[in-house]
Amino acid sequence: MNTNFYNQIAQGTAHRKSRDENTTFVLAYPEYIEDLAKIACNPKDKNHYKALWIIELISIKKPEVILPIINAFCDALPKYKIEKAIRPSAKICFQLVKSKNVNLTENQEEKITETCLDWLINDVKVAPAAFAMRALFLLGKKYNWIHDELKLILSKDLDHASPGYRFAVKDILKQLR
Image (cartoon, rainbow, N blue to C red; front, side, top):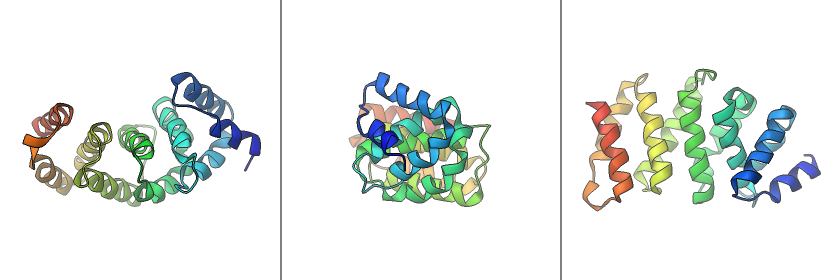
C-alpha cells in the first residue's frame, strides 16, 4: 500500500471538494483502485468509510473503473456496520446494478441482494434504505422473487416510518404494481 495515498485518504473529509479531489486522483491514476479497495473493504480500518465515499463517486462517474474490486467490495458488504459506511455502500450497490457498463456476476448480484435486504429488514436510515430498495427493484427485474420479498418488507410498519422513507417506499410499491 502506498503510504502517501493512504495518508491522502486519511486526511480526506466529508466536504465535497475533498471527496472530489480524491476521486479525480483515482480516476487519473486507476492503478490506485486496489489500494483504495484495501482501505474500503476493511471495516477495521478507521478510514474505510472515507475510501467508500471515493468509490461511491467513482461508481457514479465511471463505474467500470471499480470492476477490479467488485468482488472484494461485495464480500465486505455485510461487514459494514456504521452509517458512514452503509450509506455510500448502498449507493455503490445501486450504481453497480443500474450501470450499463458493469456486468455483475450472479454471485455478486446475490451478495448485493442479501445485503440490501438485510439493510431494509434491520431499519437502516432513510438514504441507504432508499438506495437499497432501488437496487433491489432493479435486481427484481431479473429475479422475480426479489419483487415479492420487497413488497413484503416495504409494506410493513409504514405508519411509524419517517416521511422520507414513506415517500421512497410508496414510489417503489407504485412501480411494483
